[in-house]
Length: 149
Ligand code: C2G
Image (cartoon, rainbow, N blue to C red; front, side):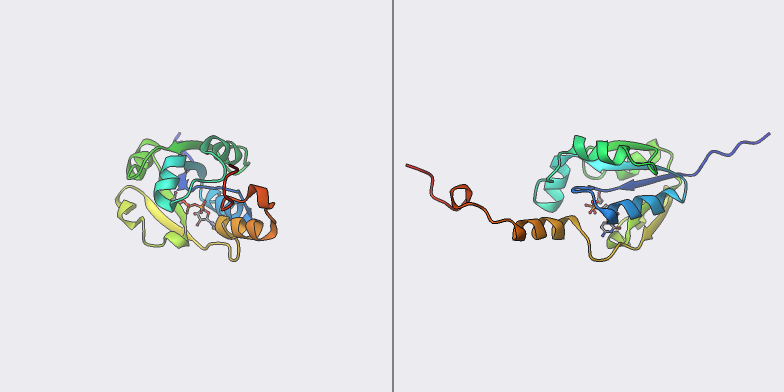
C-alpha cells in the first residue's frame, strides 16, 4: 500500500499587528497543503524595513501558531536562509503574497513558487499611520519636547 504525505507548504512573513490580510493569505496558502510559517526575528525585520516591529518575534510567533490553518511555525533567524529552510522542511511549495512577485523565483529549483494576490487596502504600515493620526499625544510625552532641566 502506498501512502502519500500531504504537500508541505512554506510561507514567510513578519505578521506584525496581525490583520485580516495576513489571515486570508495564510488560509489560502493552507488550501495547498500542510502550512508551515517562517517568522523573521526582530533584527531581521529592522534590517529589511528600517523599523522595529511593534510586536516582538515571540509574540508574532505565538499569534501565528494559534491559527487553525497553521501546522507549524519557526523563527527565520537571518537573511539568505530561505533556501535552507525550504530544504530542511522538505517544502513542496513556497507561497508568498504578490507584493513579492518574482522575488523568490530563484528558489524554483527547490520547490514550486506561488504568489497569491494581496488583500487590498490593509497593511501594518497603514494601520500604524491610522493609529498615530488618531492619537493626540500629550505635550509632556512628545518626543520633540525639550527634556526637563
Ligand atoms: N499580505 C496580504 N495582504 C495584505 C497584507 C499582507 O496578502 N493586505 C501578505 C503579504 O503579501 C505576505 C504576508 O501577508 O505574504 C505577510 O505580510 P507581512 O507581514 O507584510 O510580511 P513581509 O514583511 O512582507 O514578510 O522575506 C519575506 C518576508 O518575510 C515577507
